[in-house]
Structures are given as C-alpha cells and as structure tokens.
Image (tube, rainbow, N blue to C red; front, top):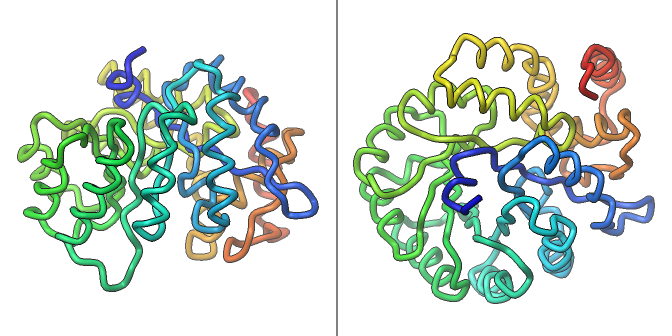
Length: 295
C-alpha cells in the first residue's frame, strides 16, 4: 500500500511503553503492532500525542523513532511525530528517513506566542531537512484560513490531520487545497462528519486496544454506510468517554489501563496524565472490556 493510500485509512497512534523504573521499553509494542497489522491498520505513528510525546525526553523520542520502524517491519507505513523546539524538531527530522519512517507528522507548536508565519517557517525547516512527505497535525484552526492555506502550500506537505472541531473551517480548507489529503484528527467519533465534508480516514488511539473495531468503522465509512459507522462508534463511545475524563487527562491512561487488563503490560502514564486511573473509572473500563468479544 502506498503512503497516500495509507493516509486515507487509519493513522494509528502507538503508546510508549514504560517499565517499573520509568524507562521506555519499545519492544513491548510488538504484540500491539502485530495485532494492528493483522487487523489491517494502514499507518502507525510513533511520537504522537497518544505516545506521550511531550512527556518524553528528547533522547527517548529519538530512541522510539529509531526502534519502532523495525518492530513494524514493513507491515504498515510508519509516520514519525516531529516537534519541540525548532532545533530539536530538525534533529528528529534529519534522521527520520534513515530510521525507517515513511513520512513525518509535524505537531502544531504549543508555544503561547506562536505566529502563523512562524509556524510556516517551522514546518518548512522540518520538511527541508526530513526529505520525506510531511503531514501537518493541526489542532488550532484559529490561526486563520490564510495561514492554513499557506501551510498546505509548503513543498512536501501532502496531508493534514485536522484536530479542530471547527468543521466549517475544515470545509474551507479542503476547498482551498484540492491537492492535499485531509484526515480526521479527532479519532473515530468525529470521523463521520469530517468524512461527509471530504476528509478521508482518521487517527486512532483505540487501535492499541481493539484495532478490529477501528477497521470496521473505516470500512463502513468507505462504503458510505453512516448508519453502521455510527452504530459501531456508539459501541466505543463509553471507552472514548472514559478517555475524556479529567479534562482529557485520562486519554492515554485509559488506553494503557485497558492494555493491562488485556494482558499487555505497557506500564503507566507519566504526569501530567491522570495516573493511576480512578477506581470508579477502572471498574467501568473493566466492565466495558468484558463485553468486548474482540479483546
């Protein structure tokens, strides 16, 4: 499958495993990657938000980028999340191709004083260094239509993971950049409305736990069977609701707790994530997973 085809499918965001000493253990991703590949997940992202990218040291991010492609071993396309200061981002981008990544995903800088033209220069430097297709991860549509159009016009940019609930801005962006692929960056629940507007595929943290469910949702959307897609999304609704607790601070924690319940130990979630999972939430997660025949 080509990268372009993979980007219209599921962009799975892998967790970062930790051991009891709080050290990263990339090898623990092997069974998760294997299940994703068997289910038909098209692309896997290392150093994304579900990977706790901003909770990793730079050296840890480098190591995850270096080791995960070998674990995937060609069974899916690998996208390397790139971010932090521009110099660190360029350093990660410079080695992404040699590490085995097929594309880089540029995190939208969280700097409180970010400027639209500064973001464009940030993306341009990363793309020039990486020598790989660039995927923009856009969480704040408030930078404006003109800035978004400028970002999608940067050479090397091939896709945008749209993680804003401003659907009218998404519609305008799609019309303004007909050669760019837009992907729902807010996971399965937001995929139907974004698909209706012209986006293709979606990001997913659920793939760490139950990739078959994500693949079934994608199949329904590709068939324009929105009734089935929405019914399947309803089944994962309680899981996503648990992830949204504590101001979304349980997002990664619930995924890691679910993996532990399924016998795949990937350790804890680091602060500032919510860990351990609250007892009531854990009880609801345990009951939910007991009803999921695919887990």
